[in-house]
Amino acid sequence: MGEALDCDALAARIRAWGLEFGFGEVGITGTELPGAEAGLEAWLAAGFHGEMDYMAKHGLRRCRPAELVPGTLRVITARLDYWPESADAEAALSNPERAYISRYALGRDYHKVLRLRLKKLAERIAEEAPHGFRVFTDSAPVTEVALATESGIGWRGKHTLLISRESGSFFFLGEIFTDLPLPVDPPVSDHCGDCTACISVCPTQAIVAPYKLDARRCISYLTIELHGAIPEEFRPLIGNRVYGCDDCQLVCPWNRFAQRTAEADFAVRNGLDAASLVALFAWTAEDFESRMPGSPIYRIGHERWLRNIAVGLGNAPGTPAVLAALQARANDASELVREHVAWALAQHADRAAASA
Image 1 (cartoon, rainbow, N blue to C red):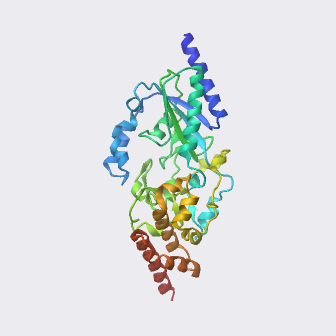
Image 2: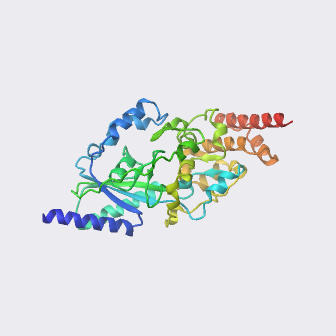
Image 3: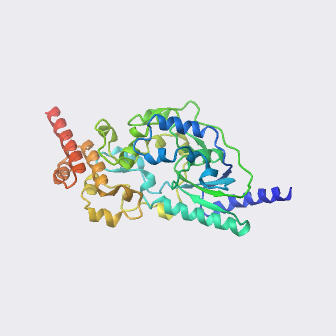
């Protein structure tokens, strides 16, 4: 009984320490994830993962924490809010000459920030209760939403992201796998109700059914994960979204409770919350290399960055500045960039001919 009471007290202190380290919430769950394996198998079988081969490579191991890290008894999950203070998403989306960048990518890469914070929490726990642990944040075959759901932090929304009653969905998730026999938190119930706003608003209709996302249609996949040419059928639908997409979250009623981040590393960098497509398209490879280290955008590289912006320029008004920017890269060294620039120029030519 004493040991159980000690674990209860330790769990309470872990939650308190989590808040001290800047997390919005901390929950604890076991290693069983009911229904997760069947859902993952069906999603992979449908091919919804597209070119994300790593999703299929690890298979069901993603749903088995104790198999990923032998000895794991509990998973401590934590959320870290990222909505930056100065980012006006609606203003960026409504101006077709501006570049829209997913709100999570406006500041520093969350992987390093969150991993360091999780490690500090795990080490603080170890000071009181030595334990074997590993920390993860989107860095291993871990089914984060399922773990966070089981730990009571929120529920999986119809857009497949986690939603919290207290903070909406604009947050990152991370985990500490531990061998401590901590008491677990109960999951919370689904509070989406009859709402289908996220399904209706998706520009490419990537949410093919409630709780089911075809990543191959998702703008975040098309602008970040896809390495080659963006399928032409989706280019007009992408609008000015050059890195990721937040539409399904922006329309979610629960995000009226979204918390502004207190994390300085997530503050907007390089003026990316109000940058024009023309200005970003003028960046040289050297500009990209000097400005983007430490940003999530750095991972896609300059070539795919230009590919994405070319699509945005093809959807923008045919101003002299937009047309000049595209013409300046019509003979770009990259075949991928040239093809998307040619498409964008053809879009403007077709619109000009139609209006004439």
